[in-house]
Image 1 (cartoon, one colour):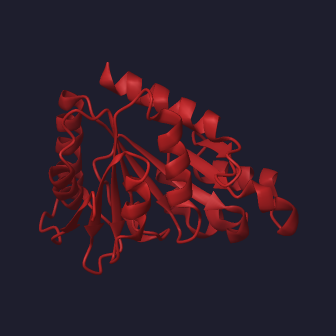
Image 2 (cartoon, one colour):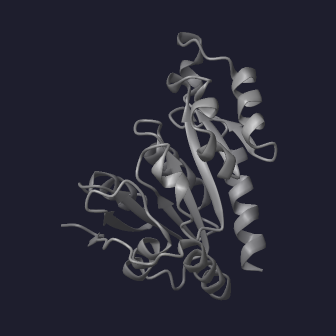
Length: 222
């Protein structure tokens, strides 16, 4: 038996997505709910990182998660096991969420009583970067196997993110990945980005990330 809902998201019909995103942020501020938009390519480790994040924060924050996928409910099943409130969003083939689609997800989740809602966006480095979801902050995960040149190939994604988590540091010795070069490439796109190397599998670097997120939530909810 599922302990989460599955919601079929309708394609947005609003032309001015930025206006809708701004309105959504205002409403979230009034409700003292912090929305994080988490993005990455498929296989970068979003769900594993999310599980570690929830486990690190659930004693202090009330957390909900919106899992966005074209189909399936695999990730929502995983997240629901952490005890966080979860909902699976099916995008019907869409490769991203915009503000109105995010609003639908929030209405399905019902964030009343939550401090932090995390939107795990559809996995790719192009479409999700093009649409403001109404989130308070954007974070993305770049995994070591993807290469240190991804910030050069996908500039918009890296330019809009407040935090970049460089995941799978435990396999760094096995790949031609230059961490310092990667950081340099990220800063070329976004000098203000916070860069945190992590291994979600080994739980390395997770506390630095959860400390940052915890402080961001508390500041927003004051």
